[in-house]
Image (cartoon, rainbow, N blue to C red; front, side):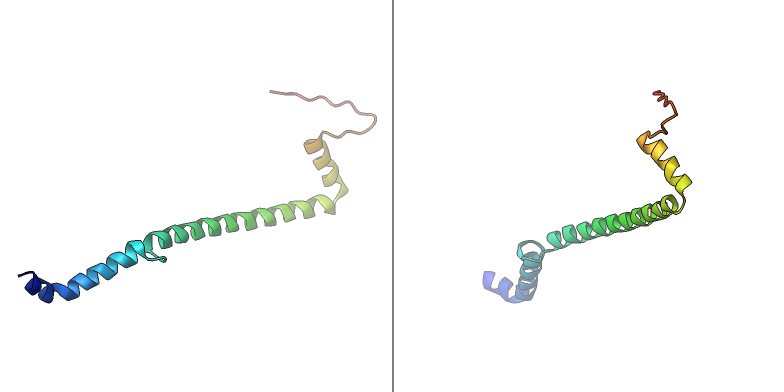
Length: 93
């Protein structure tokens, strides 16, 4: 009886075994491939973000160093620099 069932469904059993092996036990299984694909998508998103940030910073750098007035404004706002004959008041909210 068991031999008749094996003969009748042996191709389906072998196919099922191969599918389970490929999904779970193989070194290139579907779970790991999904995780790697997800990680690649995250890294590509980060890459596009950082490329955008770099272009924005280069634009800001060109604006700063193209004009001394812009550079002075940047130094005063970011680093709280002042001229010798000025008083600086910092207001903290």
